[in-house]
Amino acid sequence: MGHKYSVILCTLASTGGNVWEKPREVLEAVAEAGYDGVDLDAEPDRIEASRFNEVKEMAFSLGLKVPALIGAWAPWHAGEVRDLASTDETERRHGVDYAKKSVDLAATFEEPPVFEIVASPAQSEYPVTKTPIHLLRANFIESTREITEYAAERNVDIAIEPINRFEGYAGFLNSLVEGKGIVDEIDAPNLGVLADFFHVNMEDGPLNDALREAGDRLMHIHLADNNRQTPGTGHIDFLDVVRTLNAMNFSGYISLDSVPCKPDWRTALTGTIDFMKQMEKMAALQERIAKAV
Ligand SMILES: [Mn+2]
View (cartoon, rainbow, N blue to C red):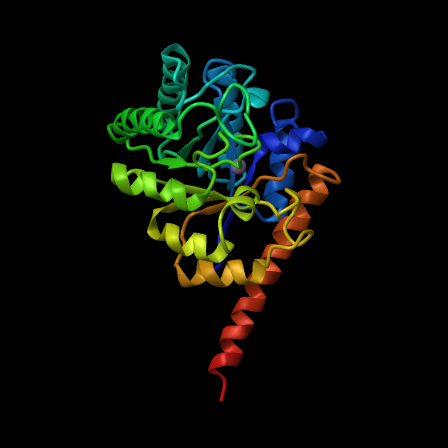
């Protein structure tokens, strides 16, 4: 049984594959490449419901699922501050409200997609965030509890995505293991972590140890190599990653998250899934060799 692959559609727009401009062309390319799903933008205030539903139905008609909604948390992505850890109550409230609207959107699906949440400051303060970490943590946990409870009533799962120190809060919620600690503390059945390999490679110890530590709380994966390009073009050992996910019986989706999507969106699409399927074949071959007499 192979793993399930998806694509964060908004990343394809960086090299011309904008799904909101040419939905059929993009979705057909994704389906033809062999993906199982697409992660759609969570922008309920900006993307008209009729347009969103049109693209969603087109994806379904091509046999694609929607396993996750991608939140726009970073100011460069959102065009505004949506900060679940902010010490400015208005800013924090705005982030929570955005999350709740996105949960409402997820709840319109027959099989609700996972919604990811992030702690994303107005401005990164590398190398050390000025705000005391314990305040950020307390605020983020308060936001997460509220969002998670709201989502539970609507049958929606929430996944915390830790972000590297250069983009997120330097010193708070950078590693997957730290995210897992917050998930354990809140301990809600619909709350887990999201592993983005670009961030995990930078902030955790050995990648595979971090995945194992996340264990059955690992809900979703964002797929890129250490250079944020397609897997196999950097130095992450993806054969080892596939073996780890196999051993964990990971049943979630692995979504391509390459930013910017080089050399072009079509090549990134096919290159990624072909490479990952090859890694799966190699892992299966290793197992057969190990069992052969
Ligand atoms: Mn990501």
